[in-house]
Image (cartoon, rainbow, N blue to C red; front, side, top):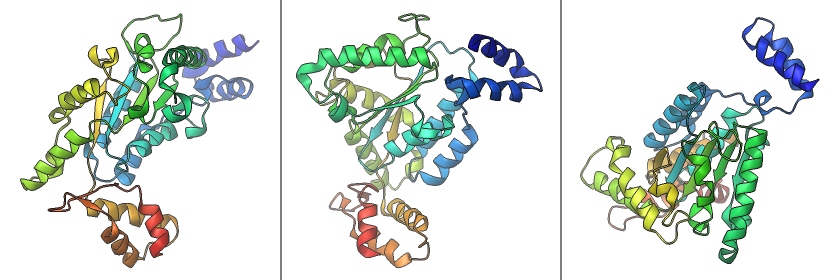
Length: 312
């Protein structure tokens, strides 16, 4: 019976009565297509309104996701790798993806988050983790081709574990009898922060606008660092070597004005938009680097909430 409703769901999806059959089908089905409700316009708005100082991340994420979802039958999944210092917005942007792709947002059963210290804590169990991860991804892609997989703190991932995903990320049409080409993978890491911050500092010292930095200025350096860093989950990874990452997404270090925008946003969420004194106090209390110049917050916006509590 369910297969019959599914056929009707597909048949009527182009007709004026599609909503009736879609609602009927979704009321009795756990098909992820019922929860998959991408809203690219809202994603773009969220990125440009609530992510500060990250023109590269804003442009790359919005463009790549929009382009990927326009392709009816992609030949490979979308693979984004976020890089930058702590507190610059990497996890925030990854959550925005889930929020604007699925109706139930980050609580959707089709958005999967992995934290190495929780899911893969022991390096001597790397082979066991490989099998578990392969099985988990395969089963969830079987359930939902539009699955989203987010891997946080990749710098803490035991080397070799993530390479088990290589067959899922390439251009092959069938892997383990699973439709995997519509999935989205997001890797989050601080690896590469040195080369990103170095370029941002050089740009600042030369008196040039940070918005002049292009992703092409950093792509090769990030890939090289990612592949050769023995503290990276991608250390000597075939995924990097075979260029299976769609785009590297650099997150630049944040200046005081960006930090103060974070402060103001959090104050407004608490109903205290008018507290410019707190904005100034928190902005002035942050630690900035380098010693000469003090251009960038060493913790981005990460400590903002605690400092607001202190000054409010």
